[in-house]
Length: 408
Image: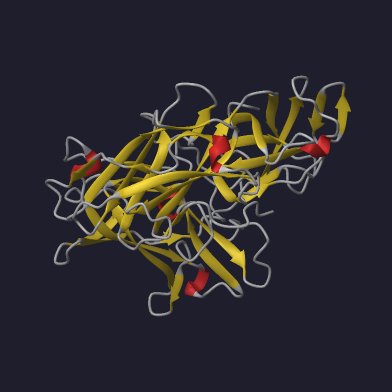
């Protein structure tokens, strides 16, 4: 079931690229802050117009479904509503001209003081109508404890292809009158497009809610993510077919990807869709890395388009979302689905997913492209939201992160 009514992670300006928001010094983390703590996030992005501009940011408090909360900004931000991003650096060494911006959040003059989902809005010249991009972040006030496991689904037909989350929530610190005051969201590999929501506990034991329904919180396991090592544009790694250096930026062709659903499962360490901005040829990859047009191609069986289906490129490189930014087009001459992205030097992990054109609300299906294997290593995050009887927004009162391999 799709959780969001809109796309919180979205780029509106054509000159913006390389947007990353993560916990301090950890590119493989989700943007989560502990309320009233010293936690910090790093925001990085590039403006490809190559001259400095005045970018500002603000926060918008949202509900569990990422709709705006009915709360005044003066009630959830301590400090200024609008803040200028003053730290920037003009790219050096790189052939591509751009300006790199960065900021550590929250700054002392603008601190979120309520738990919940937040939309970080970055815009130009202090004008909120000139939106450059938005990114989601979460502020948690841990008032519940969550015990979770990854298990084999009870359904024998799903036992070799899916993974099931079973968990309990201890709520003694909440004034909980009904379990319907809670909203629980489970996310696999930071992919909110296929988040599981709207499930109720099977039973209650005092202050403990048990979520262990036979058909609840079941995820297709997928397969270990594919990868493309683009940390160097001179050294062609094993996934690069060729590089066209006659264009500026260069054009890099990734080796055509085949369907893997008929291949046996192979265990290897992957990045679960995360992107790492890095360069083997630079001291600081944020403003010394270069850009290239990177061409991805997925060759379906018999080089024929999959009937009534759309194919998407999934991973942080496309915002982990199902939209036009990740939609691939079928090229009849190549007999392949293709997608070309302007990417910064780094290490990219990705996968291919399929959506039914007649039933777009159904979850993304990887059985056509990757296959589903219960052994696959996946990261899961459980978010618990609570609304008091007099509350005006969904408070984020608990988060649990569990790995399918370590949490069995």
